[in-house]
Amino acid sequence: MSEDDYQRIVAQVLHSAAQPMIATDTGVEAAQKIGELAAQEEVEWAVAGGLAMHLYGSPRLTKDVDIIASEHLSLTPQRRLTFGDSSYGLQVGKYAVQIGWIVRNDGYQKYYRAALKDAIRLPNGLRIVTPEWLVILKFNAGRQKDLDDIVFLLRQPKLVDRPTVKQKVVETAGEDVWLAMLSGFRRLCDLADSKTTEPGKYYDQD
Image (cartoon, rainbow, N blue to C red; front, side, top):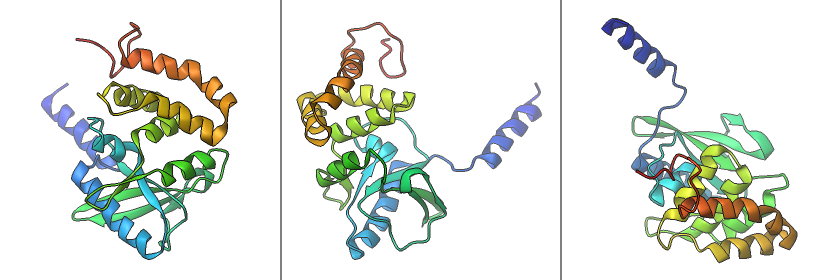
């Protein structure tokens, strides 16, 4: 291909991208802004998803800000998502940031409520789900990128207390649910601890 061909391809991708990746500081500012509204409306909330991963040190980029919450806000959602969740649009400087406002109304609701109850309040006013709850929520989501994120979190020294993961699952859903999760969780721990040669995004060794 010619240089013009490459330029045209890149221009098409940039033009067609529904939502660009956002920087951590942009995501934080968006969360702070919508958190102020949530406080006014007495709605509990906490950062989860890609922004939480950023704040715990992950290099993975994100396109939006995911927030778990106790109730919906008075804002008009741009669209309704699955299981009762909403998507809000928020302008932060020159960036239009998508906020995934997660108020689950399905079988996983109890996990999100428990994660919200245990959320940590940071000095900058953000509330963020704990690393242990981030592992649990991502395990339940089960997508490959979520499993990669779990391996990253488990690899960080002293970040995730693994017995607490078990404790929270048992308290929330019972021993049988933990036993059903156990083999998958052990696999992710083995990947994080380099006890397996299975290839993957975060656990390949140079």
